Amino acid sequence: MAVTGGILVLYLIAHMVGNLKIFLGAEDFNHYAHWLRTIGEPAVPRRTVLTLIEVVLGVSVVLHMWSAVSLARRASAARPVKYQSKKKSHAQGYAVRTMRYGGVIIAVYVVWHLLDLTFFVVNPKGSDATPYERMVADFDPSRWYITVWYVLAVALVGLHLHHGIWSAFQTLGLRNPRRDRALRGLAATVAALVTLGFVSVPLSITFGWVS
Ligand code: HEM
Image (cartoon, rainbow, N blue to C red; front, side, top):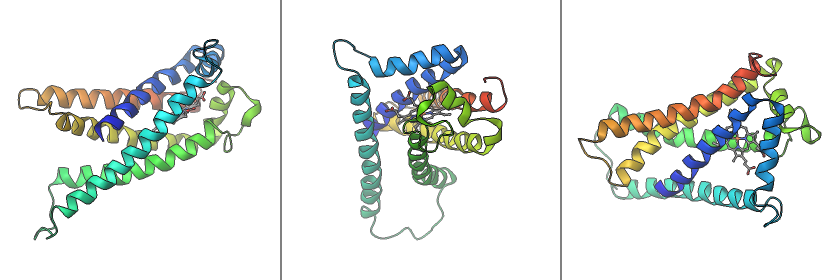
């Protein structure tokens, strides 16, 4: 869980920083999208590095979900006799719900997002446009509901990251009473920065600050 989660967090940070290039204008953003496909050229053919990244991401997502299911199964098998009281601590119930149902909604969002900005099936501009044009058309004020969908999904990603990073610190044995405050702060800061960086793009387009 922690290793695949770590890979996905690094990807999310890189992806969020890349998206911020939209604020530098159409030329810079399109140049960045082109660069993603030509990294390593001419030493390696076009899209080699991007394909490698896609394979690592795909495998990480599958293993991450598989670990989640098998850990949950192991936890319930370890306690065949149910707790007498159904009452859970607030934090426990909240974390389980956010991670479990949030994770499923994030997976649905990623499928939509790929159909939108990678395969252009649900994008208003389609494959003839530039990456910048597709992004601006996607979050046009008339399509405010798409912006709301992205913002809500990214907020869930933020919650998932917050709890996930915190759990990873525990798994990696980094937690102790002296460090806990700092580690909690680090998890919250990374999650907040990734969330704000991501949502700033659709919101800026919908509010007309980027066009
Ligand atoms: C407001 C938020 C987001 C925006 C505006 C956005 C935008 C984009 C764009 C423009 C692409 C196409 C890049 C290209 O091929 O040139 C892309 C690809 C992708 N995004 Fe996002 N993204 C956002 C959030 C997310 C989140 C939260 C996730 C994961 C949970 C995610 C996962 C992906 C994946 C897996 C790809 C495919 C990468 C590839 O081509 O292999 N994105 N995104």
